[in-house]
Picture (cartoon, rainbow, N blue to C red):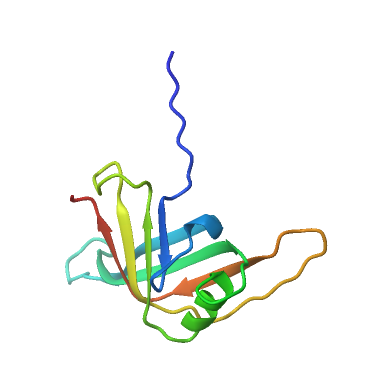
Length: 138
């Protein structure tokens, strides 16, 4: 029996135009819509429809100091509210098996700096808000 293994390391990770894919150890995206009620008189229960998009996520990044590197790139995006984050599975063309997510106008509200003895320095960068598009067309 053949087995296929996929490593979950994205080929594309940009934050505010900075390529950070080689400095990331984890990415979490939670994308959806706020539920809005569309219930009318006579309905037997509450009906919901999708409202505004919701965006929540975190990036776990290895800290690298210097202009254009992780620390400088994230520091420049904190509090802007217009950050664009792009994630894609691999370098092949965008398709149903290689979707690309683009999150626009998201907010990186805080700038975490943590030092731990004997470990590589990482920062957990949270972002929220904005709009998202899942592209599967070439």
